[in-house]
Length: 214
Image (cartoon, rainbow, N blue to C red; front, top):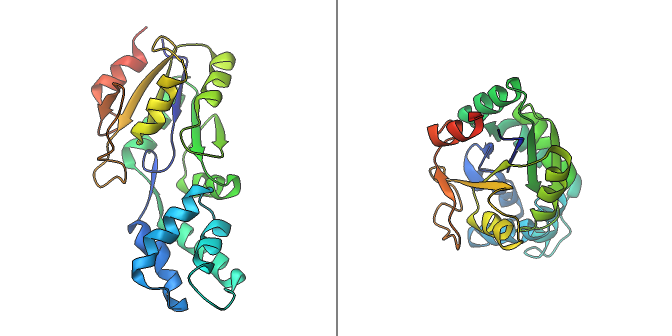
């Protein structure tokens, strides 16, 4: 039986209602050109998405110092209004934990920012592991395997994150990789190098069968 489930956060369990554009519209008051909006978001994600990284990236596109206090307040307000848990994620995570299967959220980003999103989502969980860079979750999974045992399930929307686990030497006897391809997900079209089970929702029968098979 599966010993635990490790799941990514963004675009796997939660999403920003209104998309990225709804967050970055708050920079419009500083006359940042629309064409730079995605650049700001991409640069901020490189160092872990947070209020600090967004402000730092946006500062490159304006001459005068940005009002950090105002922007931090706006981002906090945006989080409270926009962060939503996918309905299938909320129901599935609740079901897994009721079945005494530990659920570990493994996510990339600034710790306080990610923890705030988890808090606002209303998700239940057994632990949260936050890593500082993309495609670097293998060591965390090894630590969890030592703690809970094998096999486990690892679910992520990024093919590259799943590929990195396979390439780290972790075997399919230890970790079963599932790629969730949600409609309009930012990494929907990313091409995997290795084979992973594709699912559209966390209540996919193939995933459920694997979790509850003795």
